[in-house]
Image (tube, rainbow, N blue to C red; front, side, top):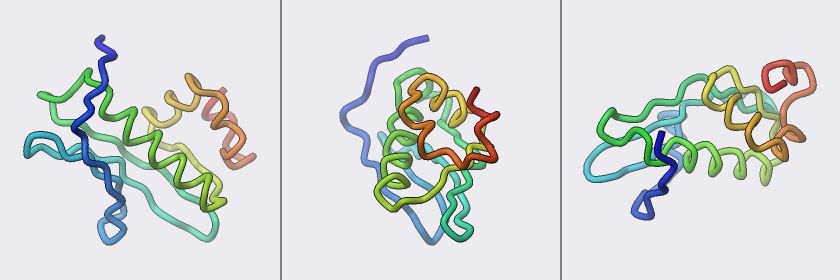
Length: 105
């Protein structure tokens, strides 16, 4: 698996669609979420096959987690990719909702 990082990814929070979007070469990678109270539930992350292995999903998730931290939102990582990202970057465990820490252990 490649871990190269694309530097031409335009990442934005599409609040109307409830997803973080990463646009690369006319293709869209997404990290879908739902907000409930002061919690952000991550439910799905998807990257087009042509963009896989380029670090785009990680950039999306890192940006989304930083936003959640800034907004003082608890994170609930139902999406396996998001949970795995937090496992690999344990400093984000501090923002995972206490009831859902088992998802990132």
